[in-house]
Structure formats: structure tokens, C-alpha cells
Image (cartoon, rainbow, N blue to C red; front, side):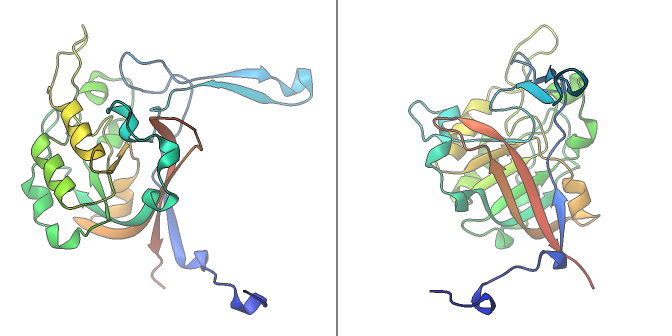
Amino acid sequence: MINTVDEIETIDVSKYEIIDLTHDMYHRMPGWPGHSQFTVEDLKIFNIDGYAVKKMSLNTHHGTHIDVEAHMIENGRTLDTYPLESLMGNAIIIDVSDSKPASPIELSSIKKYEKLIGKGDIVLLYTGWDKLRGNSLKYLFEWPYVDTDLAKYLADKQIKMVGTDGLSIGGWGGDVPAHKMVTDSAGEVHRILLKKNIIILEEVANLGKLLDGNEFMKTFFMAIPLKLDGADGSPVRALAFRRKVI
């Protein structure tokens, strides 16, 4: 039992730079083609109603967000069954920005850091795709992606989360008038990871700022979702903590 203020364990946040890895959410922002759009409208206006309220329409995969097992696996675990510690921990950010559009991220570009990737770690892959964010065909359909070989490798490493700055961890698997299918492996990639209790994080922002010119770096990371019962995913606030150099 703690009896005095001196006994309370504290963290000196002033010693860390907190880097926001979350995209801004705004009216009709980019989202998965064919899904509902994210919209914001005035419900109450201060000059009329004396207070302000916004109405939002969103789905569980808008903006920077996580996928959990129920997203791709029938009767899979829902968001509320994941412990908080599965959403935070030690992370390695790896620069894979030399990956080609609409192509798999090379397994070799991750394996060279395999001694730095431990059980229970978080792996974040920087392709630079966040800098292209917008409703262009390139951003919406042609991001570099994780294929089944890389997904199996990460699953075998027993990490707890993998993230990317592309629209999805897998490549574009749809077939719409605007763009043909890029790969048919996206669903399998999700299932390989999710079946191993690996949370998937998509549309991460600012990983390049976090790397600051380095090929890789390690940091403490968290991605905090909405507290939703029975959900297959959720928008998150993703944060990295980098110790300041004094």
C-alpha cells in the first residue's frame, strides 16, 4: 500500500519527445475504396444554439486504425477482448521506403534486422506512403504491401503488432472500374497475422519524422483505440516516445 507521495512511481514525460503517428481526420478524407466515407457536419452551431456539437459518420477502419481478429476471421476475437498491454510496447521502425509501388515489401529488408525483433515487439514499416495521402489513384490503390512470405516471417517472430503507412497491410485486392486488382493475397496476409494474435495497424503517419534519416530505430509506442464492444477494429491515436538528447 502506498502511504506517501514519495512512494508513487512516476514517469518524467518532459524527458521524452512525443511524436504523433496519427493522421488528421477530416470531412471526406481518403478511405478504403467502396466503403462509407468519413463525414463531419454541424449538429449544433454556437451562434444559433449557444453551444457547438459536431456529428461524425465513421466506420471502424477510418484513418489511422487497427484491425483485430474479428475483422477477417469468423467468430474471431473482438476488440474488447484484447488487453491494454497488447496495444503498447517496444517498437522497431524500419525504413523500407525503397519499396516499389503496388509491390511486396522485400522480406530481405526486414530479415537483416531479425536480431533486433523480439517476441512481443511491435514492428512498424515506413514506406513513405503517408506523404502521398489524398484521394489520388496512387494513394488509394498502389501502396507497397506485406505479402504472405513476410506475414509468415513476422508471425513466426511472435510479435504483437505490425503497422504500415499504407492504406492496408496487404495490397489492393479489389477490382473496380478505377483500378484493377494488385494482389489476391491481402485476405490471407491478414489471416496469417490475426490468427497469431498480432494486431494490424494501418495508415500510420510520420514514421519518417520518427526515423529522422536513420534506417531503423527503437522506441516505446502505443496505439489507443476507442473502447468498443464487439468491434473488428477501431481508429486509434498512435504515439511514439523518443528520449530527448540533452
